[in-house]
Length: 95
Image 1 (cartoon, rainbow, N blue to C red):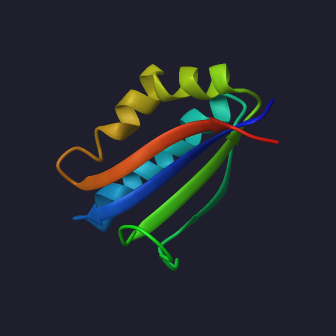
Image 2: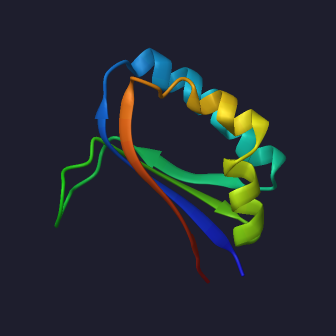
């Protein structure tokens, strides 16, 4: 069953560092047979906390998604988020 990453950002301090993260993250996602479905700062919060950016990626299955998240490549990408972005990041199975 396919799996998805959802990253909801509540704060981004430096857009240039976020762009560097995005390049590296995309490389990691693609290496693990995933694809970025959508990412945008243009979103509407209907309930809950206001999000400044949302990203969605799709993977073949949940194990592959977890392996990507814990991979050396993605750990390196996440360094661009340290002291730069606050987010919630979840993986879930879907149709």
